[in-house]
Length: 149
Image (tube, rainbow, N blue to C red; front, top):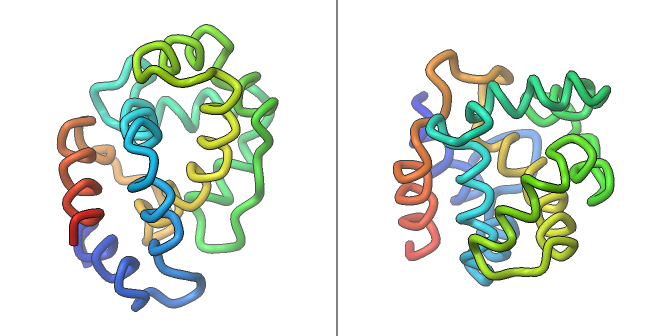
């Protein structure tokens, strides 16, 4: 099953072991800046190296177990806005917030709510794709298309 098929299956609630993306996509659809910020972090063309770079940042920040739970097939461990800010760095979040016209602390809180589920659903095989998730524009287009559908 390909990544796109997995995401489509998740949206229609067909993936086993968890809820579909309806709630997650609803939150992202209501806050397009949140979708843009998430794809800015996860896209291969991000300043952080996409999903692989994000995983490395979490490992370096002592939260490798948290991000591994999102990628793996088990339950997703939560992350607080403070932990996310610590891992990504205040400058990164401030830059994203400024770019998308939102408050930094609000963005950190919202990203801490959606990243676990988003990473989980984008890695349905329990491992990060070797080639990454695609560039931010591709991810944005795929997820944006799902929001409209």
